[in-house]
Amino acid sequence: MEKIKKAVVAYSGGLDTSIILSWVKEHYNCEVIACCVDVGQGKELKGLNEKAKRTGASKAYIIDAKKEFAKDYIFPAIKADALYENKYYLGTSLARPIIAKKIAEIVKKENADAVCHGATGKGNDQVRFELAFKALIPNVKIIAPWRQWALRSREDAMDYAKKRGIPVPVTKAKPYSSDANLWHISYEGGILEELDNEYDESMFQMTVSPFKAPNKPEYITIGFEKGAPVSLNGKKIAPVDLIIKLNKIAGRNGIGRTDIVENRLVGMKSRGVYEAPAAAVLYAAHQELEMLTIDRDTLHFKQELAHKWAEIAYYGLWFSPLREALDAFIESAQKFATGEIKLKLYKGNIIIASRKAKYSLYSEAFATFGKDEVYNQKDAEGFINLFGLPTKVQALLRK
Image (tube, rainbow, N blue to C red; front, side):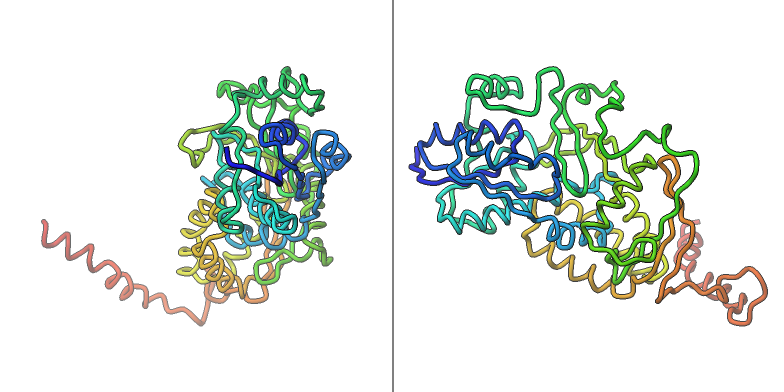
């Protein structure tokens, strides 16, 4: 076994990373440093520093990365309109590269010779973390305990924690795997693995059931500058504050739930239930603004690229030339995406109430069904004749 002197562990305080601190220290007989990156977990961070040290870490870093997460990872996803398999807002996918980036900075600072993550050998996160580490700290050894140790299940991990007196926030009675950040909360495992089962309403933390949402619609107006959301109800607002506020507003109106059987990168299908209230309303507003401000051909091409962008993020290829190249195109396409979209939120529904754009390409004078002085309807005949010429020629020659 390769000799390790110092390892930095990606630490969250959850079941897996709690026992990993102890396991790495025992298995490699090395110094262990815990690094927790705050991307909006909230209350989960309370007492984490002390807990990490009690569990075997010589030092613990708690890094606040919420602002950078919102501005440099979430906002590009909004501009791209990126949805994986048309349903998933990439909450975990977007968080992993910034977590890996901050951990890599600590690895360099501490001159560590190993970095460790708690992703399982079945999931996407192992790929996301390790591709980021390969891009940022290519000469550092990567330790992935779930691919090495004898533990094979959550129950095994809980037994390991119990024997060593490690407190973990999960029980065998409710073994949900949950990931929370500024952008979403995900739920996997437990009764969700049975596809016949509806999700348990008590599971949700950010949203009320649409059936229990208010009987009166709530209006909000989101302002954008060059594709980035910058205001709420006419008032400028910082990215993190905007997302937090929209999570509350949309959440209380039953908006932002997704139940999906998705295709993992490793090949299997898995069921995930997600809460992403702010994401749902920001995407809806941004897409509507683009309908006003981007020409047809650019918009249609961008819509095709949105699927590729989402796939890149989902697959863990954030630190890739292709993602950077796509972002350059998307930024160019956003230069006229400035305006305000008013939304009506009602019992899980997002309804467009009004649109206003500084560089709108919509012209009532051209679009009207009433009398106009700018459009000659006779011109359409020649257009249709030329546009339909291949169809006509084919029909004549093959008759």
